[in-house]
Length: 495
Image 1: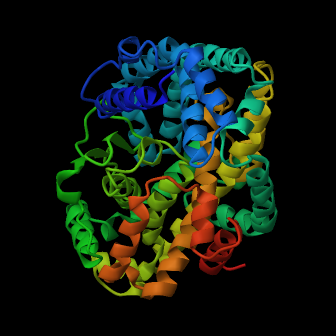
Image 2 (image 1 turned 30 degrees about the horizontal axis):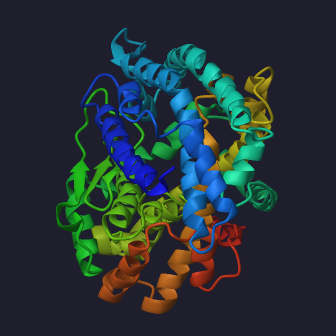
C-alpha cells in the first residue's frame, strides 16, 4: 500500500472534516454531516491501511515517529469511522436541543450554558441545571453506544483492550500523568478547601451544599467585567502581538469568528482547516475575563498552526502530540494570571489586578483538580465497555477533587475521546516551562520583546514534530512536572 498516497488523502480528509466541524460548531449550519465526508474517502480508514502502517514500522529506519503518528491516526480514524453515524447523531441532537428556562422561554441548549453562567439567582441556576441535565441524559443514548463500539473496534484492530491500544499509540504513558496529578491533589488539598469555602461563602453558598453550577457561576467572576471591556479585546491583543513581532492574523491565515450566534458552541475552539494556510479562531462571547481567556487560548493554537512550516511533513503539520499545541495555547491564556501583562494590555497598575489574580488562581486550582479527577475517572471508565456504576463513579471522583457535587448524568458527556484530558494536563505543565523559558531569555515582560516572538515562531515552525517531553527537554528541563503549577498557585493564594 502506498503510504504517501494515504498521507495525501488523510490531509484532504482533515481539511474537509475540520471545515465541517467549524461550520457546525460556529453555528453556521444546523447539522454536521460527517458520514458524507467519510464516504468520499472510503479507503483511508480500512483495516488494510492500519495494518500497512503498522507493518511498515517493523522495518523502519529513521523518521520512525512519522510512521508511528500515521499508524495512530489511521487506527483512531478506523474507530471514528466506525462510530461516525452515532457521533453525527449526538452532535446534531445537541445542536437542535432546547431547554425551558425558569421564565418559560425555550432557549437553545448550547446558549443555556451561557445563560446559566450569568444567572445570579441560585434557584434559577438549579432549574436550568435540571433542564440541561435532561438533555444530557437523552444525549447519553447516543454516547453509550459510542463508548461500547469504541472498545469493540479496538479489539477488532487486534489490541488487547482500549487501554492497551492507547498505550501502544500514544507517544507517552498515561499512568505517570495520573501519578503526577495524584501528588498535586495531595499537596493542594488543604489550600483548596479553605479558599473554595471562602469564595463560595461570598456568593451565599455553603461548601457542603455546593453544586457544579455554583462553582461555574462563581468563576464567571462577573464582578471583574469592568476590568475586561469587550471593546478592548481585539485592540489589546493586536497591540501585545505587535510588541512581540507577531501578526495577530498571520497575514490572513488566522480568521477570527467572534459572533454570538444562537447555535454556536459555548466551548471556544480553533479549527485548523489547512495548516498553515487557513485557521479559524472561534469563541462565543460570554462577557468579561472568560472571553479574554478563551480568545488568548485559541490564539495560541491559531498562531502555532498558522506559523508551521508549510513544507514540513504531513505528520508534523497535522498530527503529533497535542500536548504541544495545547501548551502554546495555555502559555497565552496564562498571561491573564500575570498582573504585569494585564497592566500592559488593559492599562492601570499591577496592583489594580491583585484581587482578580487571586480569583483566577483559585479557578486554575479548581480546574487542575477537576482534570486530575478526570484522568483518574477515565482510566477507570475505559477498563472495559461496561457502564454499570460509572455515573456514580464520575460524580464521586469529580466531587471529591473539587468539593462540589457533580451531576452523574455528565459521566459520558464530560469525556473527550482518546484521553485528550491527558494532553491538557501535560500542556498545563509544559506552559509553565515555556513561560519560565521565555522569562529567563527575554525578561519578565517577554511579550514586549520582538526576539521573544521570533523565538516562538521558530518553535512553531516545527509543528508537532516533537512531543511534549522532547520540547520540555529542549527548553532545558529534565521532565514535565506539576510542581511549578502548585508553586505558582501557592504564590497567588498563600499556603
